[in-house]
Amino acid sequence: MTVIILCGGKGTRMTGSGYEAKALVEVGDRPIIWHIMKIYAHYGLSDFVLTLGHGAAAIKQYFLDYGPMTQDFTICLGERPEISYHAPHDAASWEIALVDTGLETNKGGRVRRVLDHIQGEHFHLTYGDGLGDVDLHALTHFHIEHGRLATITGYQPHSQYGIVQVEADGRITGFEEKPLLADWINAGFMLLRREAVEYFMRGDDDLDLEQDILGQLAAEGELMMYRHTGFWRSMDTFKEAKEMDQLWSTGAPWKVWA
Image (cartoon, rainbow, N blue to C red; front, side):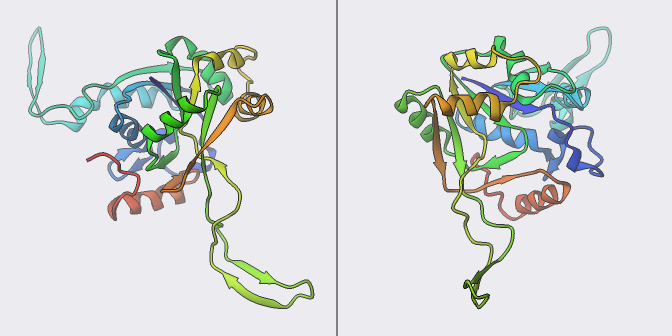
């Protein structure tokens, strides 16, 4: 199955990070886009399409330089220079289509621009800033079994604040530190049937993924949610990037690969 990763946004809340693209913000010593791709590749999904926009040149350069910048090698100079790597390439099986989908294109419009790259009867779609130990085999089984057009991975986050338990008269009866919220959010890691491309063809570059596509699918009873109860975290700000970097150094709960 093809894996489409949305990585063309401005990343305005990453101001001051020093990176040209949000997808290149490093967690450990690798960009977050690499971590996302490693999760998918662990489950045998290595046919990627990256929807580029802001920072497109930097992302392209990262992958052009990936081999020599991450591996030891011997190079023979001359009219026909050759490079031989000293060890097997950790991403040798990855096939990556890097597609410039415009600077101001909305997420739904970015997917619309790469529909020609989709292979197979189903395709994966995810955001370029979320990491989780999602069981993609279980997600795929759930998606195929229910038979509807699309599946999102749902996650129940913890409140970022402590909750005050209070009576109607103002009397406080207790505190609960950052409890699990009752609501579910869309954590990405989505799966769609090929037939769902029709929904993307109805619009243009302004097409909104959540409102125009997922909202319409939900209204027509064609959207299901796979419940993920393990680890998940998004990286919307540079502060959250630093927190992810710290998690990497203390165990990396999203690291499903060996």
